[in-house]
Length: 301
Image (cartoon, one colour):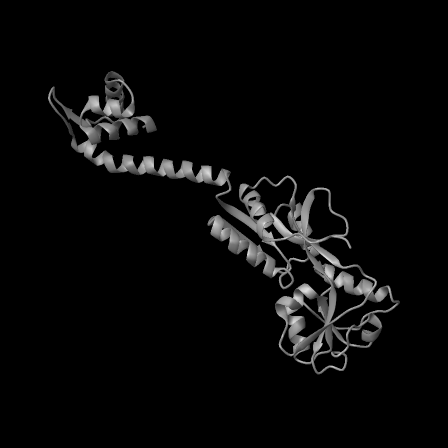
């Protein structure tokens, strides 16, 4: 059976008049009659009882009405789904981000996108640090990511959305917590709870660089998989941690104070990035929404 045959059959079944059905379909009656006869021959059944005065559905015709309607509705839904996918109204966007430092941005973006384009779905990968995010975009396992780079890879593009300064987080009763600013020299003997060296994070890299530029090596007392656990350790009384101000804005415990870290390391810039050749229509729609709700920051002083 062809779709045009099912359309013709349903038109006749609804009108029970070949002339009226032909007019509804915008065609002449003889071609319509031939289509119905051909369908009956292919099925080996009589679909209509015809006389010179009337047309009635035969039992086989009655049995075909609902399946024919279901088939045509399924085709219409499929065509609409394909159309909406091609225009970005539906689809999936895979997003990677480190977590604490950027979850506010991602939450704002997804919430707004859900309001504007409810057909878009999201696959979220958290604790995706610098190297992992860049790899995910490169190998196309991610569509969009919050990344930090010193030099932009040639196959990626991105807009700066976070400007991050390093801060020291300590319990409020720590002797250094009342200082206006701290330096690596102030922390050279302080046990630090830091992110693990692997997977590579820009935060860990910036911390190590800040100490090395002063001829120091940080006293890494314990390593954690994410900023939530390092913050919890400090909250429980373990030394201090160094992190980005964007992270403490989202994870700060009530008993923790933050003090800016003065260093020779420039502020870190986080980019909302994607591959230049990613043609996922849902991603393109999401990027337009991001332009509206996530402001850019200055990448340089």
